Length: 103
Image (tube, rainbow, N blue to C red):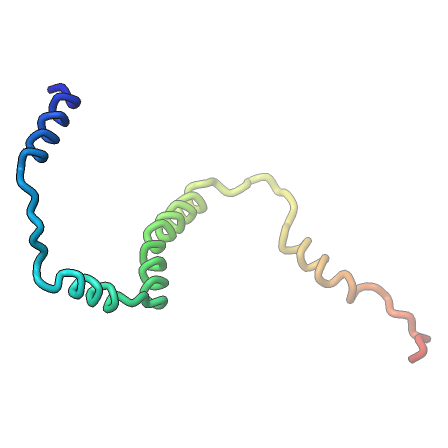
């Protein structure tokens, strides 16, 4: 069906109907009262955002866990990272301190 023709027919039917000026009793007061009761609660906004973030975080955790289990470990005897870390941390302690330092 032609959308332009359908739109023209709908507008013609809407214009042919008489206008109704009746507004429900105290309509604007009910709307304003409803808007006042909907105060923004910052804690609920944070809670909603954090709950929405749980699914992507769990998905990332599962993917990284599967990746760490499925990737084969390096079989080449390479560099021992724990030994390098220990050497780096204790490098200052291993250096000789001058014995005749004056305070």
